[in-house]
Structures are given as C-alpha cells and as structure tokens.
Amino acid sequence: MAYFDVPEIDYTRYSNRQLAAVPLAVLAVALLVLSGSFLVYGSPVPLGMDFTGGSELTVQTTTPEGEISAAFEETPESVTGTAGANQYIVRFSETDAQSLSDQAEANLEQDGDAEIVRSVLSTSASFGEGSQQTAMIGVVVAFVGMSAIAFILFRTFVPSIAIVLSAFSDLVIPLAFMRLAGIPLSLGTVAGLLMLIGYSVDSDILLNNHVLRRSGDFYESTHRAMRTGVTMTVTSMAAMLVMWISASIFGIDLLASIGLILFVGLAADLLNTYMLNLSLLRWYKFEGVRS
Image (cartoon, rainbow, N blue to C red; front, side, top):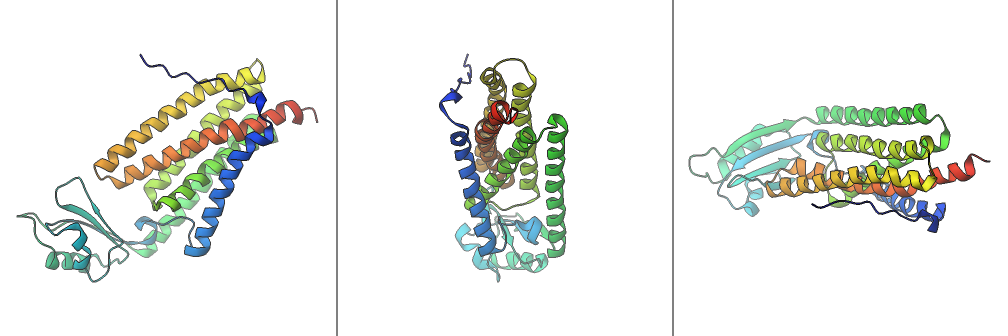
C-alpha cells in the first residue's frame, strides 16, 4: 500500500530572510499583477455575469460552434460546449434575454425535434452590482473574523500577524492567477476563496500551536506539524486536481474554476505556511522573545 511520508527539512541551512524571500517575492508579483489589471481594466480580476449583469443562453443546435456567434446581433462574450450533444452555453453582456432568445430561434439550426433554446438566465446590472458588494463584504468579514480568532488564540503580535499575512497571501496569489488565466470572479469562485481562508487558518494555527504550545525542540515541533498539515494540504490538492480535470471533461465550468483556484491557493498555502509563517515564528521564538 502506498504511504505518503513528509520529508524532514533541514531548516537550519536557511536564514529567516532566505525563507521569507520566496513567498514575499511571489506575493509582490501577485500584487503587481492585480494593480496593473486594476489600472488597465478597472478591476483587479475579470468579473463574471453574477457581478456585471448579462444573459446566458443554453442552446441545442446543429450549427457549428464557430458560427453560433454570427446568429446574434451582439457578439457573445463566450460560446462554450457542454457535455450534451450539440449543446452550448452562450454568454452576453446584454440583459435583453427575450431578444437574444428570439435571435437564436430565428438564426440557429434546429437539432431534430429539440428546442433550440433550452434555458435562459439573465442578471440585471444593478443586481450584479449588489451581489458584488455583498460578496466583497462577505470576504472582508470572513478575513477580519479569521484575524480576530488568530489574535484571541495566541495573544501575541508576531505569531498572530504571521497567520494574517499568510492568509492574505493565500488569497492574493489565486486572485492574480485568476487574472492571468482569465477565470471570472463569480459567486461560485468567491465561495472557493472563502474556503481558502479556512484552509489557510487550519495549517497556520496547527503550525503555531505545535511550535508555541507543545513540548519539544522547535524543529521537532515543526516536523510534527508538517506531517499533519502537509498531508492534509496535499490530499486536498489531489482532490481539487481531480475535480478540475473531471469538471473540465464534462464541461462544468464553475466546478472546474473552483477546483483550479483551490489547487493554486493550496499550493500557495504550502509556500506561505512552511516558509513565510515559519520564518516569522522562528524569529519570534529565538530572537523576538528575548528582545
């Protein structure tokens, strides 16, 4: 039977600055990507229909995928095939769903006796803006709540701020990846980001608790925490990878996006927890407490 063994890393070979340099450099690049995106596009990440408004038609037609756009007066934002035969999801920034449905019925070829327009989903711009504000408030409240719990648990600045900084980086890096990969921010992907906050807190609190509250040498405590934390994170990464591949094969875009975002975020969590957070903990343990 296969056995996953977490190797014991010799952290004594690296200074605190060396450990923190890599995750901080990745965080700086991610912030640069988001800042540049905001200056160029007006938004750090691409916004989905949930937040901008628009219409989504699911159509069944024998018209080739490359010719579906020509059936509409407005060029669709995207045309995506689904697992169903000859079925496509067509997204528009326009909110006049009835007009778009009429154009589809008039200009697309019917697939046997099946209806051309299988379903219609429309979101107004004002509702999308409201959803955007609500989602932003939800993320901020979750992050602030997580930060408060960290300070309540450890009641000292450095260990608590290490958790907060790690969680912040765990959110920023996937957001930058979403911009680079063109993954739109939607209510579903926001849920994925909220999950990342929970994952980040789990691994960081586990490490801090072993180092600060358990008996044993610093590096021994670190390895004990890593055996649990790394196993937990790598297992979750494997599950998210399978979810992304499966959802991509069956054309379930939202699940594929969530799986990929969580995979990237969990990889960032490994980096931030066992390099950035650990370097701050080691400084606090050996230098900060004495100063």
